[in-house]
Picture 1 (cartoon, one colour):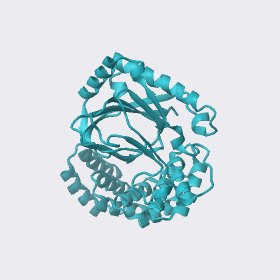
Picture 2 (tube, helix red, strand yellow; picture 1 turned 180 degrees about the vertical axis):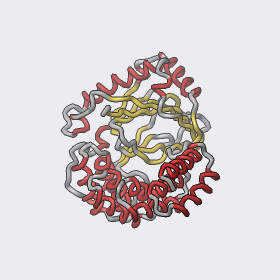
Picture 3 (cartoon, helix red, strand yellow; picture 1 turned 135 degrees about the vertical axis):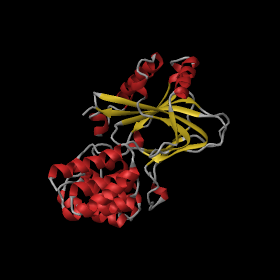
Picture 4 (cartoon, helix red, strand yellow; picture 1 turned 90 degrees about the vertical axis):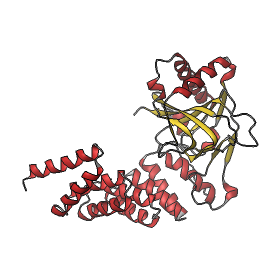
Length: 363
């Protein structure tokens, strides 16, 4: 078949998928693969479609064929390690990531996926050695500051990371209710209640609650009340840097002078919580609390910071650093984005509403 005609067929397949005509795309791709069983472009296209549809077994087959035929791109290695991670086949993650690293020696994503798989398999020392390689590739990468710190504690290792050696030392709390009248918080709370939000958004940690897109500060940039919030956060960042100015960690010494603020609203309902997580590709994170349920018991609704995250295996529970903060209306908490944190569930019928934000370096 003429190469141009072949490309036209492939483009038709791509367009069907983009238009979400998945059944037609599936039939067409099955016909194409019979005609072009070793066509790498087609195999990658089919694999990408199956991956996005979360048909991981089918995607796995196609990406495996691509890797067997060619090493021209790192993407199939990355996607295949991600698929095996979804399937909790960590030995295969280690195998594929290691193979990919032999070809693409400094690929951070492959190293990150390798490290997490090794931790799941309790190969802690091997994981730590790979974390040190990550630090050599990118001294500002968040993996040493998160998983590296965790493994240091668990294994009693004497090693100092250059970017951020112990993230939990950089917690900072403010009380903005001293600066603004309660009416300010009420207006801000009303705005967040009106912002479009999704119930338990996919691939997010919010459970039993709503979360908006992370474009809050952009979509509502003309709002005077949000302008005031951005100004407040900017001034708090200045104070934060000043407070920790004696630190030798690059987290403070190389704190970006130019950055973007990315914000979103979170509205947790009864039994609501956010699972353990941290914020990738960001420098500093924070939460501004607008509404807190009444009559909370013990640590209900608290934000808890920890060296342990994502329910990874634990060697010694006694060696986990943690700190818990009981929010109040008007509280602003800031912390390194690499620091694992979660919200403890609450049983109150009242809503727990806040604005979360990230400081992202302009590259």
